[in-house]
Length: 113
Length: 115
Image (cartoon, rainbow over all chains, first blue to last red; front, top):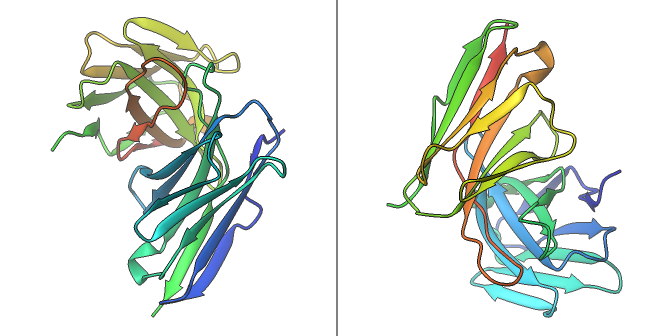
């Protein structure tokens, strides 16, 4: 049973537009959420995170929004660039879980010039 | 640059032949993790070391073992690889302090092929 779900396996966006990647979770004990970006033949690279005490965290072109009541988070990329084309993984953990990150299956983002 | 290094990047082994994957880090992080990722699947945690303390996930097969001889190195041993063990193996590190919320930093992975 998946605790972290990324229901869109792929997303295609035009360069310069906004990319919105979505993630849903089922475990209400999760209190820390991360987004990773993965290029082919490379390991996941940390992108941005958010604690459950916040509802928004912003870092340059990347913003993560957390809606605890809906158990939903999203990653916004504005403006999207061709170099953003990658697989994006949502991950979640609980503070007392000894670091056990639970990953979603990922969403493949393609940004077209 | 501080980083997580995995060798080799690609490993081919024969069915049943023991294989070892290695991971090293220059981040001086106290926690090291091993994940297995199969095609189009989420990375799945196999086990981790918190300093010298080994923590095995409940559903990790006994076929998978790990060693951490020092802070910098961690090894994944697959005693008798089966065809179903072909996957990308990811090593990650983090610094665990007080309270929750830690960021894990990943190596590039080792893709294992079992013939």
